Length: 434
Image (cartoon, rainbow, N blue to C red; front, top):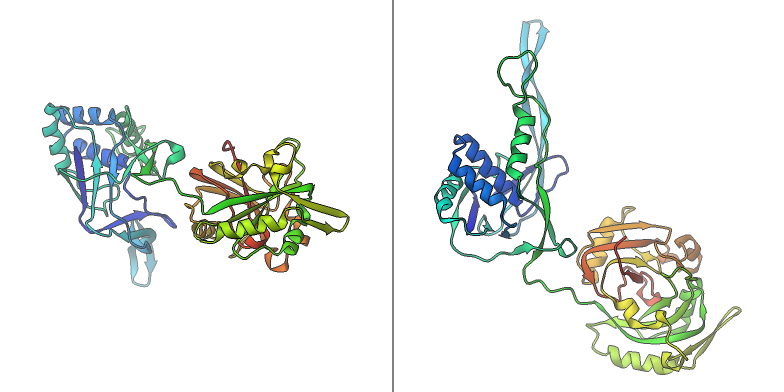
């Protein structure tokens, strides 16, 4: 069965200072609206059977149009209590006005949200339609709606595992009706000592006692990696991560290739030495394989001296045994959580939240669902930003170590921020989310 909820004003509104509009509307809101219609209609037993049946069904699929830009505004509303004031004209009364904060957004396209439910038993179909016909709002009274049974359409979002969720919405569950009754009793119908009858309890607002369900966009494929790791060169005997930038500047790699420090990190005995140089390029660069082949041929057998360090470059197949840090799958394995090996150089204000979202978009990735940033590393063997800062160019010293978490596994290699020519912002995948 398809339940259609049409928003009569063509907009959606929500209250709260600095709040955001939850969209699409939570299925729990639809259930609460049906409970409200049932209670105002006299709590018909047949309609109660509908609610008992519905709370035992699986979370519905949802289809909804996109929203336009949100706009916040403030309304000054008179309070119920009167204030007595005295002046030259004698005693008079007034009402204080309090601010009410609202945010609203236009609904783009036809303002109808569809919920795809399991078909009800034949004897409950008529009372279900009666309940829907009396639903007048979803959530706030500033969102008047008209609910009815629809006939067609396909869901845009479907229930999914939490790790794959694009959205997290409140849904019904067995026992939700009783939980709503208890909430209503606590808010409005608590008996007060010394007062005959039942009066409003004057309690503060309490959120719906719903449960959260992850939803995933239907038919959306997992994101493809923006970078492609095309070649690996081993470094003997290895190089401290501090000297990595100086080494890369001397190599003068072709434009378009990004050097990645394949370091000994993420292990209980990790020392942070760079054991290999990975050559990566954007998948949109047509000549990436040709450039990588030329660079590998030039680096094989090359030597560089950095102070007391003398570095030799060899292709990995010349080593007696393969090292884990030199295996491409170690850096390309899909993971939900990623931590930086080299600091991420980012632009923006002091708060990196907007910068993280922008860098993810530039790398062709979804916006992380969680992140942490700071001068200290989140991975064993990685030096702090303060240790590495003296070895970075002046324009790249505004950098931080990052922990990023996505709602679904992201394939590597992963690199974000400025300094791609020096391999800054290179990440390591974690097998498990901490």
